[in-house]
Length: 481
Ligand code: SIN
Image (cartoon, rainbow, N blue to C red; front, side, top):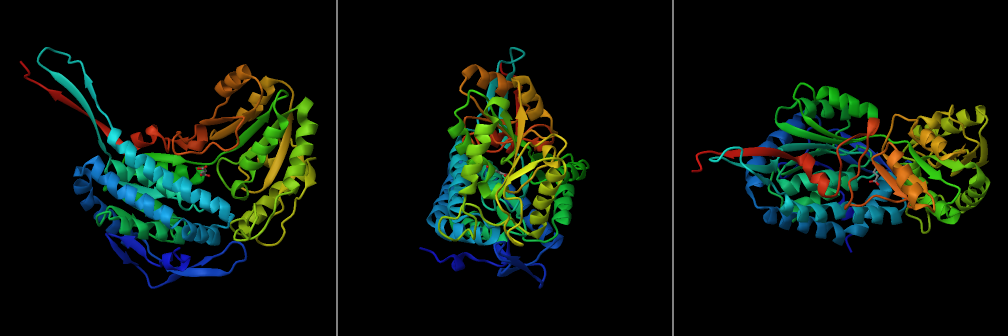
């Protein structure tokens, strides 16, 4: 088994070389105790420009390979990631804090996009359209869009990269990635394995930089970049959209969420509690699809709250490397303070803190349950991104749906009910890109992940996830007599 230390790299990867723009190094901290994991050379827009130019040069030769040839390289990359699963998972837990079992799960999840899109690229079909005159024939083909910029977050340091770059690479687009500076080691391990897999120079580029705003703006304004895919906050997504206006660049945006979890009076309450725990506390509540609001029908409110609180009280908090830990640290002290502010706000407005409610130290926050939550509380409108579970009450189906939709966001939602009719009607009424029905974990490479409203645009994963990386071209054959 590879020692994780053999997969730690400290430079950016551009045009097939390990390079850096500056001599200055960035310290990467373990969120579980603030200790240093290592340091990485910082780079900026100078190296980014080199990466963009290298990617642009690599575009035509990469595009001209057959889907099967590209598939072979992607499959190799997939196998290398799986072979090094334990080492990558250890690096991930060290730099983002999630429990080792979740990190292992993320390696599988992230790698699954590579395998899926390696296969899917062979099925990028066009169309033959009946001609509009006797001597003409109409054909539509799909072609790769061009150089893709991928801006990725710290909460899924591996899967958010592969979910974007696997479809791009599979259809023939070179990529330039900027991972979060909080979690660069996982990203660089991926780059090392991409190098070993045999991507030609310039096809796979990754820049470590502590200047996300400058990198984002530069990518948006570059004439050589055709598309940007971003996962992160709605505020930054809006900024990137504005900055892309001058180049009319295509954007895929996976932004914030405010997921409702509706429990109806005919639900299997034990199943709902199980789904609630899985969805709310994944990565200590730090995912865009984590439940933000529990909406529970009046007649089952007390039962759900009691059973859920009992289950939450059993969760083990600690360093993600330790056996049996289910909830790791929050990413930094700012996240601890923000989480605390949600609790304070709820307390002032009449919420009952029935479990937790306090930071354990500068790194960990107690899993928290708040009952009698009301719509004037801050978490009714804002994404929590921490281990707090507010429980709201509703009476009728209409009221439940109205409360669920009363947000600018529209990423994931969840409903628990024993009724098929209710499942359909409520799912159709929810203004969200995804609905889990009697299921708290819905992410998979085979289904389209994405949101509506201020949660973004575009879909990642599934057969639809390839569309954003291709353009349609119409061919008109004349003189066919
Ligand atoms: C995210 O939090 O952005 C992604 C979550 C997932 O893929 O399940």
